[in-house]
Amino acid sequence: MIFTSNFKIAGHLPQAVAISRGLPRGWRGRVYRPLAPSWALVKITDPQQFITLYRTQVLGRLAAGQVLRDLGGDDVVLLCWEPPGEFCHRQVVAAWLKAQMGIAVKEFNPRLRSHREWLRRMEGVRR
Image 1 (cartoon, rainbow, N blue to C red):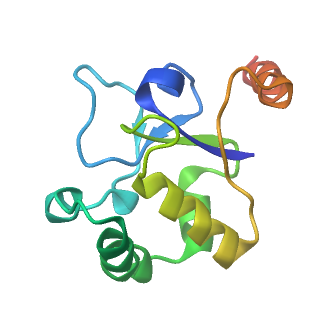
Image 2 (cartoon, one colour):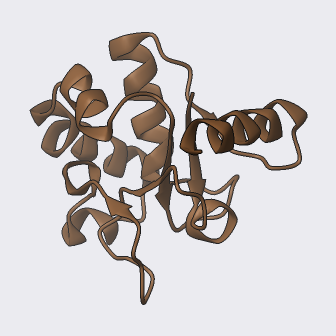
């Protein structure tokens, strides 16, 4: 499964991949820069304007299948900074992956049983 989340909730997971322009101090996890918005995009406060420009400037230059291959498959948690429920580019990425690949990307919630079960399966895979 592919999930989205933020650094605070899921940054400790081995499946975490940062897709943000900035990273937390001391970040040692994976980073996938092609999905990171430019600093100019980060400064845009209007969500519709951001979505339009992000789709054009970032997603429009990428092939979803290649992004998935680069990420190493579909067991990842794509991270950025904003808390769940706030607008964030990870939501745009999730919608893009759904449109391009038919993959439902959900916001990771460690309180949900199905998400905890996924984590347990991933723990078994790493051993």
